[in-house]
Every structure is written in structure tokens, then in C-alpha cells.
Image 1 (spheres, one colour):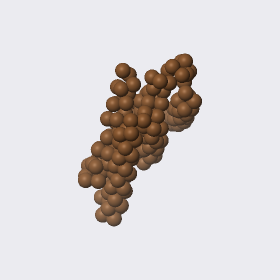
Image 2: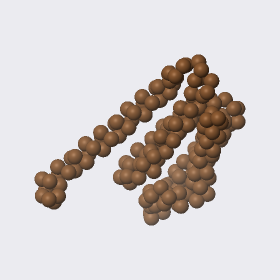
Image 3: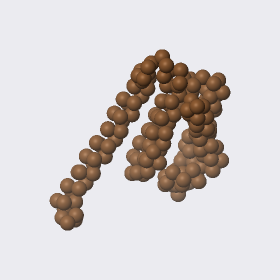
Image 4: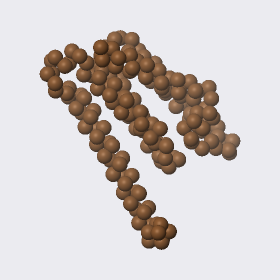
Length: 176
């Protein structure tokens, strides 16, 4: 039963990049505002930013199309392996958001655990339970290792930055 729920959930999430991509293609300025990126006022800069959002939208539509094609085959392993790319896309989008606007990265990173759960469920389906007798498949183990490593890097880097800023405020006597 969980096999079907996970498959259908992953199939439904395959449409999300395409929907965001269509919004980026049709309404690039609204897409920039939705993700809280600054909309440039200088005409050449604005034209460049809107063009880049349209390219980003086209990328999302193609990715969604590929995910849906993977899902239509009915092969859960293929679908799970395809969705692994989503993790890197979400992580990269979060880092770009953090570097450009100084925050809002969790708008992207917050979806990663959902995709990890679905990918794990797809790669480790009911038939795998019988053959592995409770052990995780090597792909899922590797995926979990990299997720823990990435989260550790993110939080330790963020905590170091916060500690430096706090020290500066204390030295400037602005904190207390």
C-alpha cells in the first residue's frame, strides 16, 4: 500500500517544477517577486533578469517533463533516481537565493526532506524489503550520507557566521 502512495506522491510532485516554470515563462516579474528577488529598475538590467527567469522557467518545464516521462514507465527505481536531481536543484536554488538576497534559502531547502523521503520510498520499494531483510540499499545509504553531510555544512557555516556577527556587535557595544 505504501508503495502506491509514495509512487503517486512522487508523480504529483513531478508536476511542481513545470508549474513554476510556466509561471516563470509567462509572468517572469511575478516569479521574481514570489521568490523575493529584487526586480531591477534599470531597463537593460531588468531585461536581463527577466530573460534569465524565462530560461529558468524553461529548465523547470523540461525537468518536469522528464520526471513525468520517468513516472509513466512505472519503474519506481528509475523515477527515484531521476528525482535525485531535484535535490541538487533545490540545494543550488537555495544557495543562489542566500547569496543574492541574503536569505530565503529555506523556501527551497525546506522541500528537500519531502523529496528525500519519496526518493527513499521509490528506491527501497516493497520488493526490496524482502530481498534486503531490513538493510538500506547502497543508493539510499549514499543519499542519506550526503544529505546529513550537506545539512551539517550548512548549519556549521551559518553558526560560524552568526558567531562572528555577534562578536562584532559585542565589541562595538551595540548588543548589551
